[in-house]
Amino acid sequence: MYKLILVALSCCWALTSHAITVTLDESSLSKFNNSKEIFDTPKESNGAYPEYPIIGNWNYQVPSTNCIETYQFQPDGTLRGTSAKQVVDSTYTISKKHTQYAFYELKHQIITSNMEKDCDEEFSEVGLSVTNFIRYDTTGDLMLICADENALLNNCFGPLIRKK
Image 1 (cartoon, helix red, strand yellow):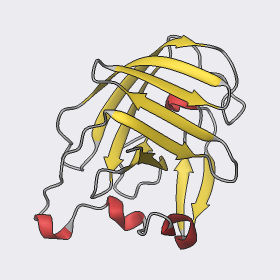
Image 2 (cartoon, rainbow, N blue to C red):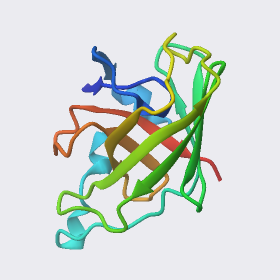
Image 3 (tube, rainbow, N blue to C red):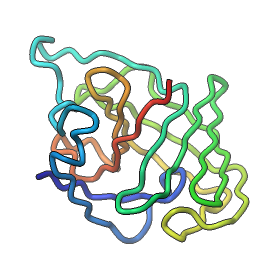
Image 4 (cartoon, rainbow, N blue to C red):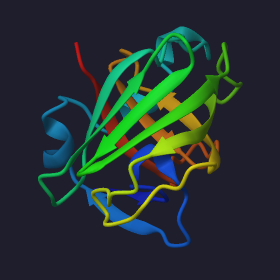
């Protein structure tokens, strides 16, 4: 069993003052045919970690709900996030290379919000700026969004699934 601390479930990862603990067991991850270890640096890589683009569409199934969040990263540095009735547009930058700990630094700022509630019954306000750290699995088709670069992945939520 694995525990991930969700520091942000609201659309576009607005850090909240509370943290939610979600337990993911092997059956929860089995639909991905893997486990938390898929986010580790590949053993055969001699410490190197493949690089993946964030551009594209990503889905996140909020645990214990039917609510799905979607994130659409565009090549022009814009991001649209939807969560329940909430629609938020942001600008973002992401580091071109991953850090020594295989994380990409993602910074974004909300530029528009329809001020509807998200999957967690929260609002995302215009002007909010957030820095998160992205960690991909070994295929680049799953990612975690983390509040820090902790190798134990304690302050993360996900996985988000790349839509093909």
